[in-house]
Length: 129
Image (cartoon, rainbow, N blue to C red; front, top):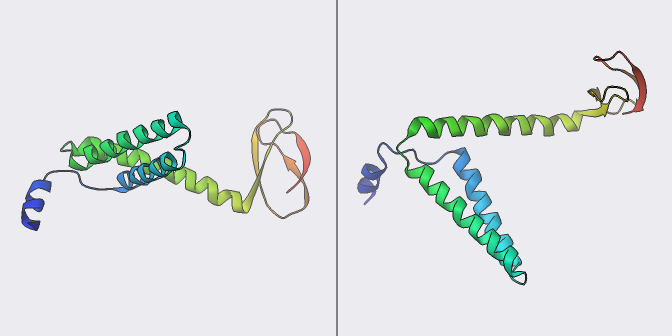
């Protein structure tokens, strides 16, 4: 039986990080659908979203267009790494907007009141980090 499955999957894409993320969304939308049974339309919307996501997971898994699936995976990993980097930076740095040009400026957390120099418009302003 396992040999038949391996033959079937030969040349197909299989599972990856994007599929795992989409499957977590399927589970999450099904749970939301179950807890919103009283509100009919919201429950139906999340149920159909979960069906569409499950279809896309299986479509990607059994696809033979490997180059397209690799591109999708790479763009997902690129986006998720940016998100993870931002989350890790929020632990170490405070972010402020310059009052004159609205440029975001990053400063270390826990330094008390500091004078911040905007690199874009050369304005100094004082904030508590």
